[in-house]
Image (cartoon, rainbow, N blue to C red):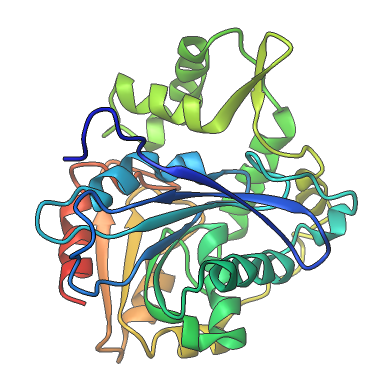
Length: 298
């Protein structure tokens, strides 16, 4: 393990192409400099989430006793410590993908392992089309080239509520009450960790740590029409090793889509996160061993 007085990560601030001040966390390996040439892991969160979502996972990976890896976790524009965009139309996967490329270029990263949770996985589909050279392998966390309208509507309605709380303990109770049926595998500490990842304190109140304008695009979706898919981009992404993790209770990512992703593709493996919905905690004891083995075999 890293020394107890060593910080787990350092903050990185960088500029996007259009001049926004963006943020990421950089978790160094615990035993530098000899890490056997292992590539770094870049973690991309979900729609309204941020780099804090990956803290427990990043610490596990950076401190792995046999295969430690550097981990970079991203705050998209309008989330976490990244600046809000004055033009909400720029909250889209193409612009956010270019922000990820800008970060990789700034850090001199020529090739990485990518973990994409939900929105992050969609961004990886775009990255595969724009800069396939950056990708060595991917982990898609409860996401694929096709998503289910029911799950997206549920996210839209949840984000639209914009709940506030007076303490992280109260926020954890609220999260458990709202999502507990889909996540029976989680314990009280898991919900508290999630509360610290999701909320931030402003003027004495805990609020969701993202720009409320993010929900505008979800509200504008016409759910009477089929949602667009990314199958051509997935074909490029699937040329590299891939681990797909699906929450057993997920409403956004169907078992049928997962099966279609696996068919005839030798480089695509899968793992079901039992007792979890959208999106699974990757550091959970039921999921992390499979993720760790996948990364170690690369």
